Length: 221
Image (tube, rainbow, N blue to C red; front, side, top):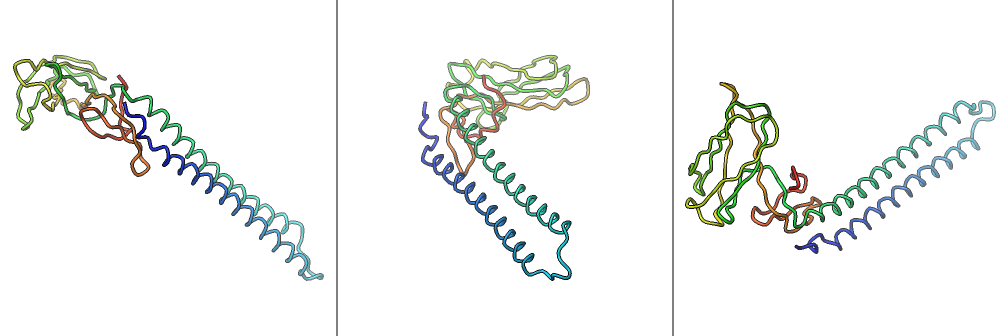
């Protein structure tokens, strides 16, 4: 189980960058407010004594700068929250190492003479057919799964005397309810070997099926 690939220096750098950005945004907001107040004071000092600014004008301008400052502060808070959520996601992803997960796909890997996966049906089906496809894409076995309800389903396929361990296969599901086709989504199962970040996106390295996005995980088995 490789925990080290979650790049700690990179995370630290991101945190430092986020902190620096937050300080810069806060400083910019303060600078804007200071410039406005200086301009307002200069305007009041140099106003026409016979036609001075009324209280409504001053109040309006003060309200405008307060709105700008508030919006700047809100932007800073949102960016800070986004950084915290990203760090939380990274910490949560580490707990997946060593766990079996389901991700969208149709790949199967034979181990100990068996393989299996899961799928979901958008509606009730009166007949569901499973087809196992060999490395070349041809059908090597067909299994009638019968009637099934809507939702998540799973299957196990016995590969004994058909293919050897380590063979990568694929599968497809054909579901109908009478003469109406029922939409299905296929999933593949594998164990998480490691978690890492690539271009700011969390990735999972699966034991047999390779790299997938963290966000693609549909279930933890």
